[in-house]
Image (cartoon, rainbow, N blue to C red; front, side, top):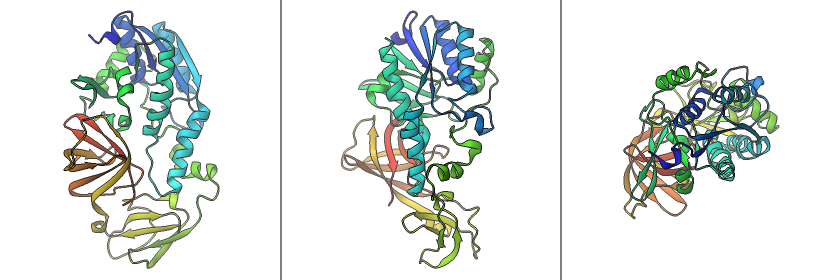
Length: 361
């Protein structure tokens, strides 16, 4: 048994108010751990989203408190709104203004949860911080390793790729071997009040899913109009803001052509959206930077890996080349819709080796 999760060991559980983290708290309490629930209040407009399952605000905090009461464990709510606004929401808005397609869940895990909350857990004398992520942590010969979840359809390791070795040594993911149905069955067995609660949304802080409306409020002038042009610069139409587009987008372009057109790249400085045929969208060389690496460092000739370029896309075979702060994934076959701001995450089988933010070519 993991010594950090043995009976009597203090474990802080990051409780978002959802079924996953609630089940983690219940599992560890049943095991006899000294469980302490901590919920981060990250923003104050959860009710404005108009949907259930928006993580870390309003009803979700109340749900976490109800679960803690059911399990008879202490529960604390920490106000991290200012930090979340600065490090995640503002970064999200600025990334779109720069013509990128950001992944705020990665930023939230990297900074708010696995830096700040982990420090809180240590201050509380915990032996581990447990979360409801579907991923697996394994002890390898060179230290802890991060692996994909047993249920590939629920795997969340992509969102955890910026976890450091030191953080991974302290983290635990008790749901890594479970399916979602198994988790809900456990929640029902524990009689948790959130057993049938809908899953949280990926971008939890965007009201009604309209990220462009939120960006316009945060950054007035973000929807300045511009031109939609083809690859040689010929004007095909006009748009009302670069933030409404992402690389690979086909629908909603508002221009007609003899063949389907896709967004090839965004040029925010000139407010231009460049479109073209699908063949022009393909990319075999994917540059990335701000590397976080958990596996053995590859040599100059690179390493054979599978890379994920978006969270919902399957891994692609590639050769990975690394420098100190930059890297390049050379894909065996072209990928379509490679967007700056997303993450290039490398795997060796189920083991996550590391990755970085996709940069402009």
